[in-house]
Image (cartoon, rainbow, N blue to C red; front, side):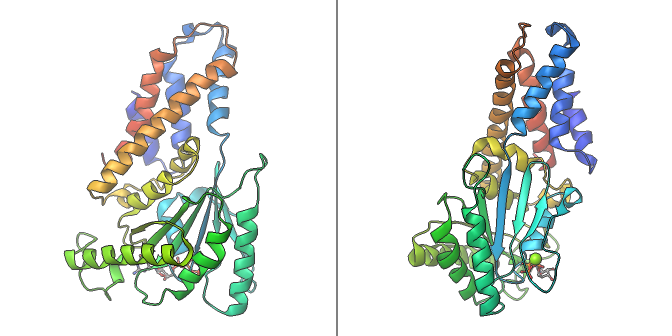
Amino acid sequence: MNIKSINSNFSNNKASVYTSLIDILENSMEQSDFKSAEDKSEYINEVKRILSNNQVNIMLAGATGAGKSTTINSLFNMNDAKVGYGTDPETKSIEMYSFNNLTLWDTPGFGDSPEQDRNTAEMIKELLWRKNDQGLPLIDLVLVVVDGSSRDMMSTFELISEVIAPNVHYRDSVVVAVNQTDIAMKGRHWDSVNRKPEPELEEFMNEKVVSVKERIFNSCGLDVNVMYYSATEKYNILKLLCFILDNIPNEEKIINVTEQMNRDVEVWKSHDEETISMAQEILHKVGRVVSGAIAGAKKGAEIASNIGIPKFVGAVVGGVVGGFASLIGF
Ligand SMILES: Nc1nc2c(ncn2[C@@H]2O[C@H](COP(=O)(O)OP(=O)(O)OP(=O)(O)O)[C@@H](O)[C@H]2O)c(=O)[nH]1
Ligand SMILES: [Mg+2]
């Protein structure tokens, strides 16, 4: 019943993994495990509190028209997002999309004019130096979106080496995602029926990944993670999500990103061997985070009842992981 309930939640746009997790918890625990109904609800609230305690902040940056906004729309369930500020079209500023425990900071496109670039650079620096209420860097991950169909990457390299690299706190937390794979060779070698590149285009993109990585390393010493995808064609979106989740420094936070995943199964369809093993590794992490929260809640809630945690932890973790797995087609 657990897997089934989480699956039906996935098909409902409004539902989240988080709500279903709580459902699964409710269903897996017998009332008799607790001294009272209050005990049980205190316990569930404690699990909720632990899981929601980790705000995730992701910054998107890149050249104008690279596809930052389109990418946000492909990855996340934008019905839940509210535009925070930056609605004035004249003065370009950072737009903030806020979900439950995930905030996306969409920075203005780089490369329009030197004056606008200086403004954008200042805003990005300020954001990278911002601290959360625990005094730690607010931004967990920087996602740099690159237009794979453009030969001119000067403004992207400048953005990374002069603005991002000197100001980023976690040196592993920069992901460079080369978008627009479908038109990278002017539309040639793109298999539009199967929505994936033909071998020639694949080779072209693999070379691009290597050269982008090398060029960034040589210019500023930052060893970034690079991958390619197509936001409009929904190609390699799961891989992009895996790169994001894999490079978030704090493992406990990944559940808050997965919670906001786009619920449209079409988005997550295409994947290669590498993506499958990355996704499996991430599913294990999700399992660890959930079971950690369950175990932590037992202490936090100071439950007098001697509930047998192992009795239902397997069902809950299995349900949550199974839910993700079925969404991404495993
Ligand atoms: N063919 C193709 N077009 C894309 C892809 N991703 C984005 N686009 C198009 O590129 C244009 C720019 O996309 P946006 O998402 O607005 O780009 P942005 O980076 O947010 O741009 P700014 O906010 O102006 O900096 C739009 O017309 C998109 O439809 C892609 O993967 N393939
Ligand atoms: Mg945009």
